Length: 211
Image 1 (cartoon, rainbow, N blue to C red):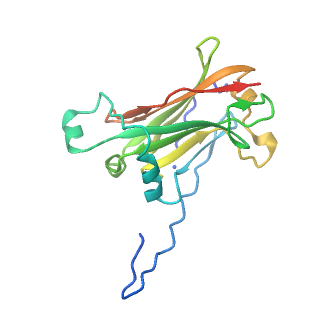
Image 2: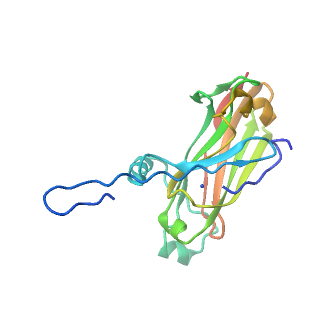
């Protein structure tokens, strides 16, 4: 299956001791990343942002404002926040975030950072995210991969990604060629929608080059 074809994958206190001394409990281990193999051979991963939820929320409070979808009912919005953000997107090779990739040897992973209000998570809603790559020369969508009907399994602040940039072998990388991208200029954009209430987030386009 070509990566241009939409594929769907289900995705991911401190306590005070008595008396004079106060002791912090060990932080909870992060949930294991969820990885599902697709026909493309790439993986979908997800996890929390930051070492703790509090640290992640402190960081994410500084980024773009929340977006409430037009489809959300007014009474629901007035009673609950139901807010969702895409707080950032990145293109990553085996060496980390970058904007230039060798067509046959570099890994290319697409990453979306997401923040959702706690009421969405508590209510048990699911989300669908789209990873899209646009060709600058033609303005055509070359890749549209969906992570569909995924639960909020990683708390209010988390990331999801498509494409293997961790191996374990270089031959396992999802290269631009495996995505179906020849040499050229592209941009990566993302959308995330909460199913059933109309809340959504959309990212800005992030340009990158395949060479």
